[in-house]
Every structure is written in structure tokens, then in C-alpha cells.
Amino acid sequence: MFTPITIEGYPAVAAQHVEQTRNCQVFVGTAHDQQFVVQSDNARYADDGVTEIERRDPCGRAADVARAVLVRLPTGD
Image 1 (cartoon, one colour):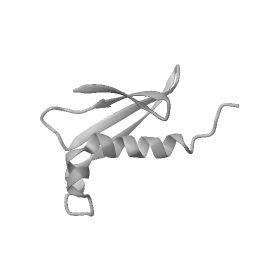
Image 2 (tube, one colour; image 1 turned 90 degrees about the vertical axis):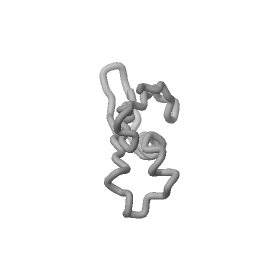
Image 3 (cartoon, rainbow, N blue to C red; image 1 turned 180 degrees about the horizontal axis):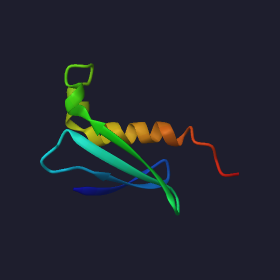
Image 4 (spheres, one colour; image 1 turned 60 degrees about the vertical axis):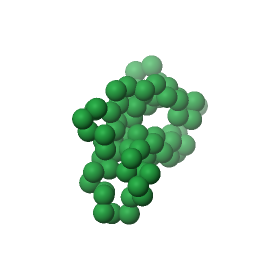
């Protein structure tokens, strides 16, 4: 399943396997020829402080991490 999203004004897509609902990858385009990927695997953190909402929404968790990365990236100025 692919879902187009926007994070901090950048185009992105959330990708999730239908069979693996606790995993998600968020691909963020930062330039015409550049991107970065954040992967969330909530199955690994079931007993490690992850809330039930976070466990059910790994794409939201990955998007939050991507947002934190974007606000810290240097600009091309």
C-alpha cells in the first residue's frame, strides 16, 4: 500500500506491506535526485515504551521521525 503524503512541504510516500501492518517506510524527496527513507518496525518495540496508538500506526511514527530530520537538514543556500 502506497500513500502520498507531504512532510514539512516535501513530497513523500508512505509504503506499507499489507501483510506486515506493524512496519512502514516513508520515502521523502528532498531534491530532484535525492531522497531519504525512514523505516519504522513497531513489532520490535512492542514491550519497549511504544504506545498502542504508535503500535497501530507505524507510518505516523516514521513520518514523525522524517519531520524531525527535515527540520534539521541544512538548506542549499
